[in-house]
Image (tube, rainbow, N blue to C red; front, side, top):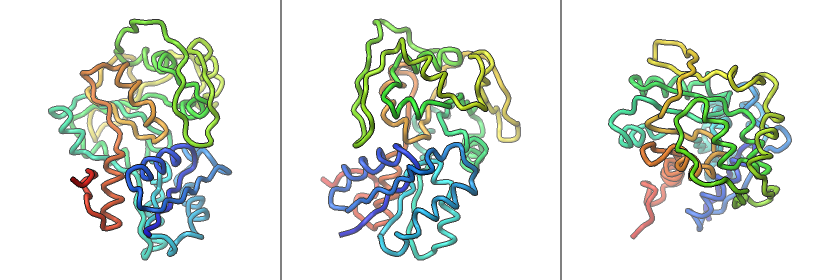
Length: 288
């Protein structure tokens, strides 16, 4: 039986492992989650590379594939491939064809992403692949912690995003939302009224401040640096480049409305996994 290791520095890796286990039921999947050093989104790339290598060294050469199950941990992909050329690795990626197909070349692309990725090669690549799109990267600090305790309600997302984006008007009073939780994750219901102060309390010190002081970063072209703006925008496409946010996709779709495409790239991950293992159906579709 083929064996895969899914590695990450938090609950996002559990979501990725659950997804692959559901789609590839004949494949043995082992989860390697570095809880000791979690989260990885506040570390440098060199730290991510070093920690990833330490955690994965016992599995190198003993499994068929190692999946880096987060966009932050995937920053170590090229380093690991150089260090261990005989071991197959894949990481999280972006399907640019799907972005362009979702709209006739989107002019506004909102990216929900870890802070460490904003200045990484991934974002540089995105600027090159989408040269005529404005890339918007709002502040997502504290979201992962709130998701982990089951407190990221739809109303909490509305409060986070309403200063920067045009959102659909809430038609009904928000009620506590009970979400399906990943195996082992603490489960609790948190009302939208109690969520906002909780979110403010877990923001990292380097981005603390009132709502008006938090910048919205955009980029008009690959040759221009990011600049801040206070416009309220309606993006054409929203990209979830954090596997933690997969379970919030329905909430984003509801808040932005049917005119905005909300994309994650779990199907690309499935395609890359099947391709690396030489499995049939590398397009991510089930066989008929």
